[in-house]
Length: 319
Image 1 (tube, rainbow, N blue to C red):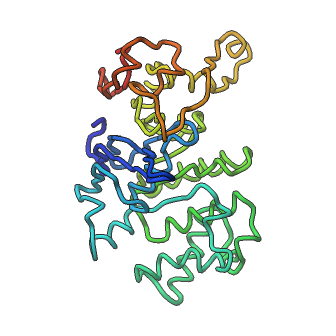
Image 2 (image 1 turned 90 degrees about the horizontal axis):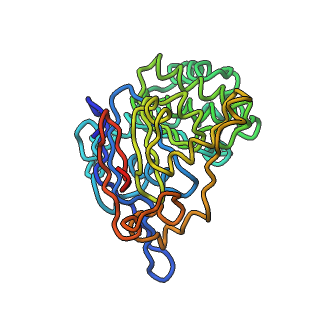
Image 3 (image 1 turned 180 degrees about the vertical axis):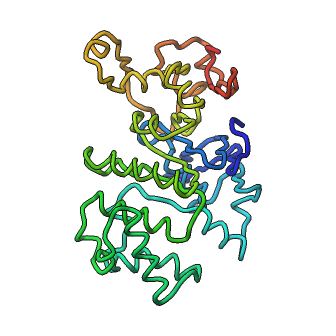
């Protein structure tokens, strides 16, 4: 669906949580996409739309409630033993919060070296050399290996997290909002580092973010989520040139343009109301109560996620 030579295939994935009173929270609800080898697939949407839950389900931090995740044509959630260990080496994750994702009681060297220990990749002098090399790769000094996470800034901690992900020489990285907790001045440095690592190591990324300008800079294709559903997906240039779903158009209108005349003349799309609770999503199209182009069918019938040409897919009754 969408990309040739798919190294990752997500088919009708669902992740539901039981919450108070036996109610069902549909964090991810019937989402499908493919990521090609060497591609950066961007996943965007407002906070709470299910992006992080999707990423964690793909990498098996959460079990699925339905659907399948295939990596190299293997069903990820059925892997066991040696096959699971192999998958855990091939796919790694960079977490959103560099303050919470590093063990404060471990030195930086042990944080980066722990994945090597688990997979038996290096020990002794070779281990120390690889840790030093990884620190240099992410723009830190080998001397930092003896220090603890609290001695570093947020940007430096995120670089440590990236070094840890690289320690087992993965081929696929899920980057879960890796810049959202960082100062704006540091964000571009981390994104440029991720881009350079992709070019040098042939990495494939699932890049989860809500900063649309960063997603445009890094990604070849982009998927847009709203309340657990994928509402639009297209090649990056196509999506930013001609967004089709009313929700995507509203998101795009919020991206600042570095041209004062253009910025003054364009119309910002302001959506009414708040994002509904995923515990009680609206019937039909989940977006209909905020959409400026709602029709009667939108309130009654859920739109089908369909391709309209050129790898551009949308779930909207307008098309």
